[in-house]
Length: 157
Image (cartoon, rainbow, N blue to C red):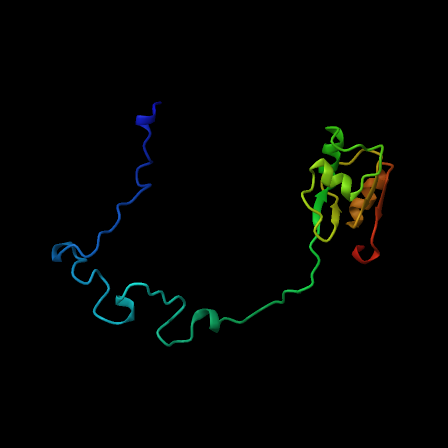
């Protein structure tokens, strides 16, 4: 295959509709905009306006609530921690802290803390200290012979 042989798939591109090009085109003179009025002028976008009728976004019921001070945790699965231990990116002999997880590149940033979940296999005996953990994750680490401690009491389940 050569560069000059590259083609788009048939039907992938459509030709632009050229409006205001004479009466024979079907979109000549007023270019399909009708006569006069706000919408016939340029630079107008009336989004959500339904001609005086109550707009759909106002007719629908408002549901739910967004907590303004909600905690956002960086989530990491035990399977990924095991993978990083196997690849020697995390030293299992030392305590696995939040700083160690960030330094290894497993987590980019701490946010309001790091929470460990139980997805994947975990077989290494390791001591993990994080802000939060699921009950299944704590059980999985203890089953492997290690311990998972939650550093701040407010983040615990």
